[in-house]
Figure 1 (cartoon, rainbow, N blue to C red):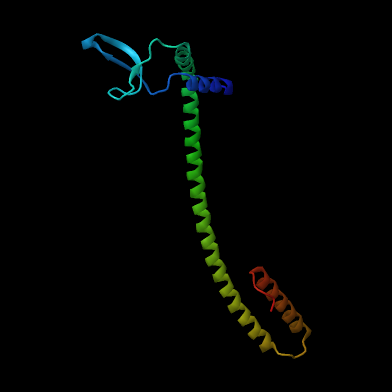
Figure 2 (spheres, rainbow, N blue to C red; figure 1 turned 180 degrees about the vertical axis):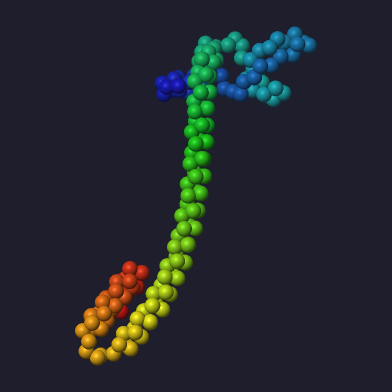
Length: 160
């Protein structure tokens, strides 16, 4: 339905006889089916007679609008179902990402521990090399220190 059609329905509903409406009859006493306003056995339950032009227009307009209103309702239910499916899929993806994040955190902790052990071994090796003046050892020592600094920074540590 278009917005003007919906606005017309709203206008007719506001101007028509207030609801709820029902079809009521009492064949035993000769009351044939009629449209009533209100609820049976409640004060104010009265037949809508004679039916006003506005009430007749409301009935006709609602009857003619029913197919498009039902189709729109189905489309919106399908859209809602698709959104629920997307939400479920996103939740599953989010849960997978949380699990992956936890795995990566544990892996990072393990890598930091390995780095610290390797750093201790490298420092011990460098100390064992001593200061014998060999340029190859000095070059290796400098490169090892630089490599350790790069690895520490990459793992989020400081270059202390």
